[in-house]
Length: 307
Image (cartoon, rainbow, N blue to C red):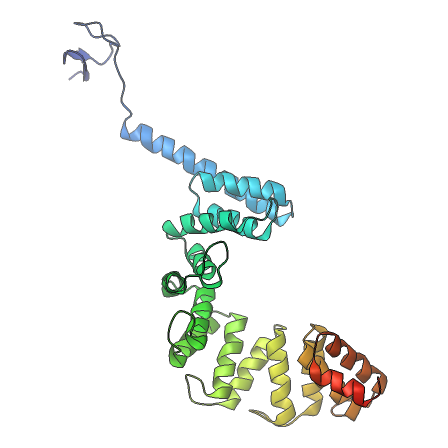
């Protein structure tokens, strides 16, 4: 059976080989078939994926202007990850003038596509008022969406909301659970935060041994808060035996990362010869560094030493 088409002017059935209606001479109007639409959509997807991949390549080479142009091209074709990258570059001012409001818009559009990193980023924008007005209720909503998909950064941020009472009542057990979930994915800040909960008995039973284990795990990745906390555990014997030498090694590493409280503690150890040989010159050097960062205890020690 031959294929036919129906004239839109006179409703005459015409052979598929004809382009002009045999009755009224009207031009055949071709409608797009499903295959036509699918092919066009595939071409669009291929194009936006190409732009996104090029953006990743340019970003890895620190060619920020080219990366931004490629990510934005992919974003404008509906690529959710491209939207997220475009937003981040707007916030950072990389490859384009800094524009947090534009960045917020791209995070919002990507989150509408269900893109988990953007749901987290959008929640963070609402939480901290970045590119938009603070809205803690919406922050919690979007952070929960990403957290429920096991996104570690969202679990950490949502845990902080429950720990400090941002946009919700303080709930230490919920905070502890969220920190634990993010820690299981290896998030270093969550590992440290869980350790703090163990040390202080917030949301869980107090356990200094487990606290030290978490601090030490995060310290292995040079997280300065954990280095300082692990140093205190060793210095005071919390969750582990007193070991001034190990404490000093933690304090020194945190000091080199610019933490003024660690610089003060390291200087004190150097001055008094606790876990390290006495070195007054180096002690004064670290007291000064801590003082320059505003550490009041270091300022008092320098005044005591007549410096």
